[in-house]
Each structure stands twice: as structure tokens, then as C-alpha cells.
Length: 335
Length: 150
Image 1 (cartoon, rainbow over the protein chains, first blue to last red):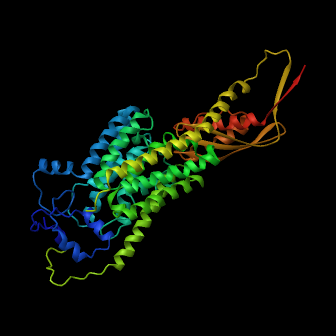
Image 2: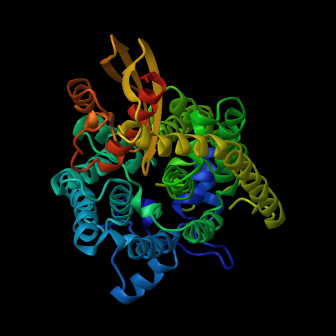
Image 3: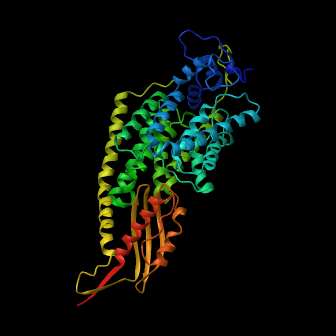
């Protein structure tokens, strides 16, 4: 198989320099660093963890490497949530989750195939499918669940920039599924049916992952804004917001904050941007709830935040100029 | 690539967020407790009792009354209009549930037809049905008038 981009060719690794991951690259682009400078900072060494076009190592080595990535951690924690949330019954939960994952993953493979790209392990689609499965009511018809999973993958390709997509795939698919299929969202994967100590399980797993991907400011400002606005309103009109502090809305808010809002391709890297987007998403979610958005208020806030970040990235991309500093060697060009 | 936020700052911020949440929870708790108390008191008054020697007849005041019911997946607010002692219309005015209102769209008509909050449970929307019934009952409590004759 040929390497699909120059950046995926194995380069000489400078001693002590960590490889530049796609997330690092996005962070540098968000800071206005030029493409030439990014290419010169650290050579990119492909480990083919969900990448394309590179000859693979042994399966066990790949799995071990994947398990050490943030995606691997997230997948492991989702499996824990799947186990804990199966009180409804495995006969209900398992087909539902499998349908969502298959819908998302097969669509990703189909898009790669028809797009002329090499087929790769669809790790992102797998996670999007799991999120769709966790949020949708588990009694949703299986074809509908699979369709929503497929919609998540399609949205990632339809609304995309050069190296990023605009909207959180699962978020957009779940929002569209309400008018398209009349679906309900029980957020069962966030464990709203279990007693309050399980909120701590959700928080513990989410905290590990948020810390790993450095999104604490985003999560904290979103939660602070959301709870702050609802608390202020509870002084004036408690009945309007009373249920939002309880299950399932509490667990839904935490799940969205920890696992959907922090999705690296659709969340900011700079701390200043994280704070701004966190406040925006929280404020829009509150406004949507008060204006009668019903079940979709969190998703509306999330997608508005995604759109704001996409606009900022477009502005930065136009401002960025590729200038090769004097005396700097070309090295590996960024893909 | 970016320098990590100091853990102490993260812990402090997390504590602040938790404090804000609990403040909101406690402040709004009174509203939930009130709703639950009203809902619990509705059931005995809707069942007529013949224990008293006095004859009791009940009807509804003319007007529009609002009620809110809470369930597992959120709350529903309804507006019940009455005229001539009868329920003339029921409207769902606010749906704050994780399920769409379309699932219980047929229930308001049932209330008008049966002149009672007792409606058929909607398959797959049991919790929303319960919240709807609770909301209607709360509104009817406000609308109910009791006349007695010795």
C-alpha cells in the first residue's frame, strides 16, 4: 500500500523529540503557526493508529499501541459504561449498541472505499457509534439506530475542512434524528437509572480522559456556565429548572461535557478558546432549554460551539501565511 | 503540546462548579417537593366518597389552569381550559423531557373526551404519560369547585 500523504512517511526522528500527532498539529494551527513551521518543528512518525496507507505491524502490537492512546482509553471506559448500564437487559442493550456501531463503522468503510482511500480500522466511527447508542433510547428500532449511526459518520465527511470536521458527528446525528425519526434520548449510557455513586464513576472516567487530552478548561467553563445560569434562574423561578439538576439531565450534561464536547477534532486547543467556547456552549444550551428546545437543548449548544470554532479556524487559516524562515531546511512537508 | 493547567487550579475550579451545582439543586428542591406534595394530594380528591351524610357535587370553575407533572425523563406542563363545569380543551405548553412531545400528542384529546385525567398509557412513553397525567391532575385540582348541601 502506498503512503497517502508525505506526512505519513517515516522520517528521521530527532532524539528526544516526540512524534507530532494530528491533535498537536491542530493545536499548532489554532495558534496560527504556519504549515512550514509545523513541518519543521518535529518530524511526523506514522504509527498507523487509524491512519491510512502505511504497512502495519503485528496485530497485538497495534492493539497495545491503540490501548495507550486517548481513543483507546475512551473505548475502554465506554465498555465499562456499557456493562454498568446493561441493567435494562443485555437482550435490549447489546443489539442496540451493535446496530449503532455497525451503522457508523460500515458507513466509514464505505466512504473510504468509494473515496479511493485505503480501508483502515474505523476507530473514530466506532466511538461515534457507541455515543449514539448510549444516548438513544435502547428501545429504538434497530434500523433507526443503525441509520443514526450512519448519519453520524456521513456528517463528519459532509461538513469538513482540510484536516478537521465541523460538527461533533454523534451530536449532529442525534439532533437530526429527532425530526427525521422522532427518536427519544434516554442517555442510558450516562447511567441515569443508577444511584448517585455512579455519577462519581462517570466523573472519574471522564476526568482521566479530559486530563489526558488537556480539555479541563473547556469542561469546567461549560459546566460552570450551565449550572450557574440554571442556579441563578432557580432563585427566580425554581419550577422552570428544577428537574435539570436531577437525573437524567445531570448525567446527560456530564456525559456531553466529558465525552462529546471534548472531542479533539471539534474542540479548541488554546486555553483561551476553550474558555470562550465553554461559556458559549453553556449559554446557548441554557437559552435553548428555556425557549422550549426540550430534549435537544444540550446538543444545540454543542453544535453552536462547534460552528463557532469552525469559523475561528477558517479565519486563522486565511490569516496564516506560509513563509519559510531564512536558513530553515524543508525537511518533511506537512500533509 | 500546550503546558498543562496546574492540578491545584483544576481542583479549585471543579470545587467551585460543584458548589454552584449543589446551590442550584437545593434552591430548586423546594419546587420539586411542592409539586410532589400537590400530586400526592390529588388522588384522594378525585375519588368521590359517600361516607359523609352531606351530598357532595363537584364541578370545575370556568377558566384556564396550569399544571406541571414530573417523571423519570423530565417534566410536562399543560394548560387546561374549563367552561360550564366541563373540560373544554387541554394543551401541552411545555415539554422538558428527553422524549419528544409527539409521543403523547393523543393524550389531550383523551382528557377532553373522558372528562378525566385518566388516560391510556402510551406504549414506550410510560413515564411521559405519568407526567402528563400528573400535570392534568394538578390543573384540575385548581379548577375543581365543591358544592355541599346538608
